[in-house]
Length: 129
Image 1 (cartoon, helix red, strand yellow):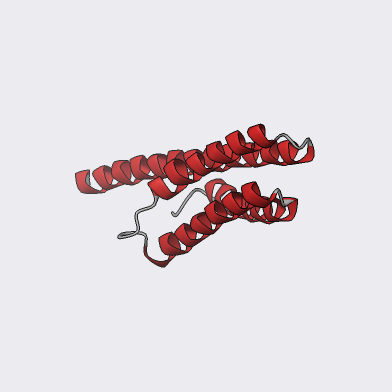
Image 2 (cartoon, rainbow, N blue to C red):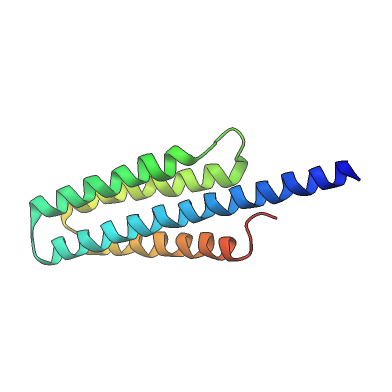
């Protein structure tokens, strides 16, 4: 009986940790979306310096917050797929900065919102349990 209780405690603790990790992932996506919207505003106001600053911050969120949280060894195909998205976003943002092409930004923003929605849905369903 003690073993079952211990298992339930570990399972409950693991679920809490997973939920908190999902909360953090969603928060990182929210921060990235905020930066992308700021980039959009800088593009529309033709503020090159602000655009560069916001793109740098977005790239930092992608690198430190998203790529940095991936475990490519343990995460398998999902981690590799996410990494490919993150790399594509980074390249696209650099291209957007060089060309001031809002359609590139819109494509990234749409993709980020789609993945954020998937993470949010996973969080609402209680994680991977």
